[in-house]
Amino acid sequence: MIMKRLRYFTLTLALLSLFSLNSCKEVLQVVSQNLPLSEEEIISGLKSALQVGTDTAVANLTRVDGFYKDAAVKILLPPQAQGVIDKLNSSAAGRTLYKAALQPLVDDMVMSLNRSAEDAAQKATPIFVDAIRNITIRDGLNILYGPDTAATNYLRSNTFSRLSDAFEPSINQSLSKPLLAGRSANDLYNNFVNTYNKVANNPLNSFLGLQKIDDSNLSTYVTNKALDGVFLKIAREEKMIRENPGHRVNDILKRVFGKLDSPNAQY
Image (cartoon, rainbow, N blue to C red; front, side, top):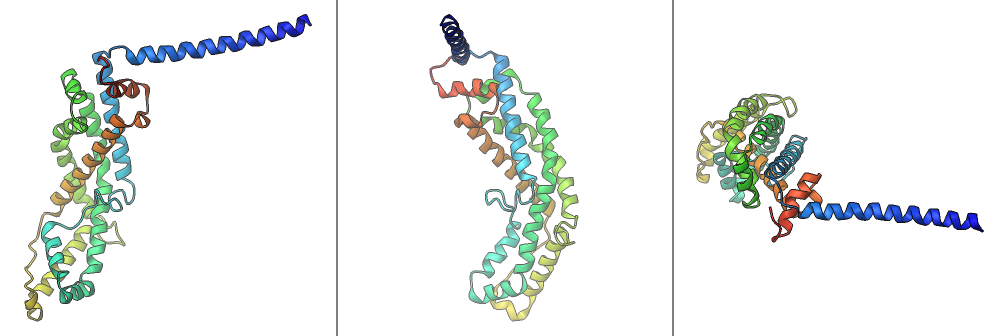
């Protein structure tokens, strides 16, 4: 009987100890969440948020179809080329001509432009890392108290020029790569322009009022569209981290952005 009571006492003591440890841990977590944040913690949290956001955005966009199958960032034809296609499709005769002579070229070209952006987007990561490393206390406070995309805006203003300089040669190289069935985006675009211009110059099609497409700088166009897509994705990641606790994937993010969930909490 004594041994039975001793075992019961030991088990009860163990359970109480475990409960006490867990309770202490929970109390410490609550206390920690309500302590004012230091400047170092704010900067660490913002750097972590940007690192998570940029890593996720770049990883998603550099996958096959990262641009091509995402309507928010998919790169279409340059405006002049898209304009003539829209004009062709505005009439029954034009649609027939477009489907017969141009649509296969357009479909291949759009896919190739997006493949080039996916290929080049990996250039962004080291430039983002460098910019994130250089965030100052003043930058951090402006970002923390700024709008939902304040961190993305900071990153864009501090990296866009460098990214453009790094992207364009890479985009230009990608546009020359045979990324789609042994053909490059440049080849496909030149073929499209030449085919369209022949159609537009044909007297039989004069009633359509088609204008000739001038050569355009395809690499600059794709570079700017690719960078717009990158920053759009980073902005979405930032907003999710700010608004959704489930996207705060480490302790410093939970601590810093958890404060934003409590309007009366002190920083």
